[in-house]
Length: 79
Image (cartoon, rainbow, N blue to C red; front, side):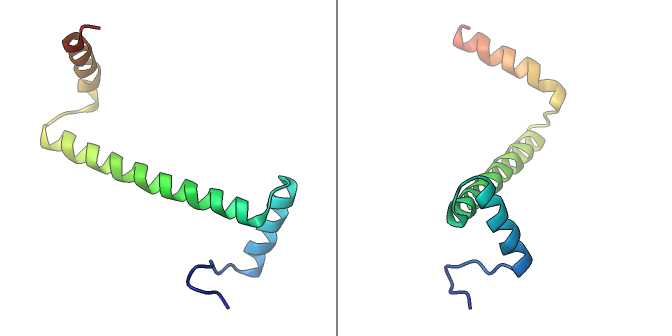
């Protein structure tokens, strides 16, 4: 039985996970930890993208505006 801090995996998931971990000469815990880190980073990145999309819509910007905005920003910084 899984405790609140342990993921519950099906037998087939666990078998595949163990196989992958052995192939990489890593522990199941290491592979799971990396997978969770990747999941967290992915969700954080999705949140950043949603924020960017919302802000660009508020300002009426499109993808076509990006090169101009980059050039303007660089000009302001003296690059």
